[in-house]
Image (cartoon, rainbow, N blue to C red; front, side, top):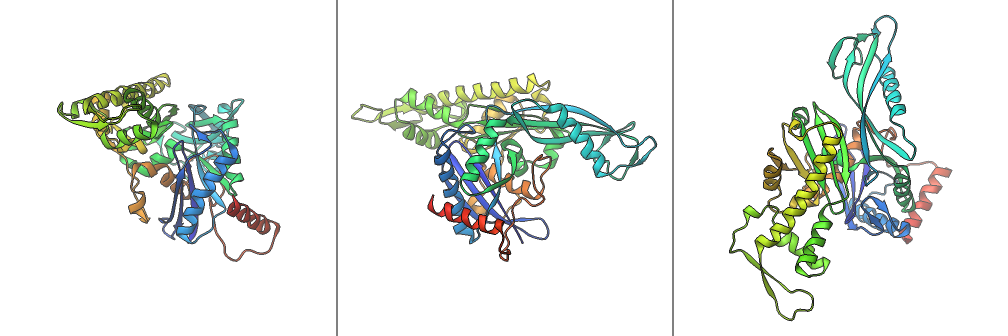
Length: 415
């Protein structure tokens, strides 16, 4: 079996997964590590050394559980600098019709990447969609077909180059080599969406602590990928301010008493809190808490929809509705809120297709980490990946690379 590893680097938590890929391409989860994020905020590294130690801690925990050591990892990336666009690429296969080869598709994608290049940005994904071979439209896979001109729309996803390089530096400082970077929303989509949902049109929302990442699929392919810098932590701050409690208590209240839709709360429902400076507990109506949460969720969704519309698409194109994942997907009433707000069907997305420690990670908050592992098997448009995302070999020859990997392990142990 081939060993693969992923690191989901979020604002609130860092999750490391280690899996083994069998001969059928199925992933067996054998190690899970999780730690509180430090030195990271909304996809941005704010303190390099602190972030590196947190990353190393999460991976070490997964290594101890799995009994495996890893050196190469697939990581997620997101943040304020994330943007996407669709480029139309066209290439001449031959003056006279011949068989289309992989090199023709690569040429077409390279041309689209060249169009999408922008100073200060790094292209992370280039995903072709809507192939046309001569006058034949709707081609899903042109390889092996006969034609002379190949055209396709290519979905380009890019991010601030400095953000990408700093994230990569934090991972290498922790002792690991990031062999592939995957945009968080696309990783989560790979973990929780069904193929028929993508074909019918679906909006995937990954609402974590610091960021709400999203991707709109139409006819099986992504057409808009984006991120807004508001998510669970801003809801927690609203609760802290409204109820005059500290952040830790506000987070507990959100998880235990919070509801995303006011209409789901009965007027007589109450709970108790102890605000700062008070010597006795106060009774709070639960619908007031729900109002605070619902108002902020509406604002976040308005920003997501505005982004989609600015890209030239409409939410009602998503016939399969909305799928929400990430930590905020565990908020009570989130499905009902989304159905009411979007007037579309909605569901909570949980990672599927897992073998091994699935009871530990069948939770929306692990969607990105699981999707990253799946990308290591099927890269799907990742621009910078190696043939094998992560591998482990117990019989390496003595070489400079071997010595360097041993040194990395040593430094990780003392972090």
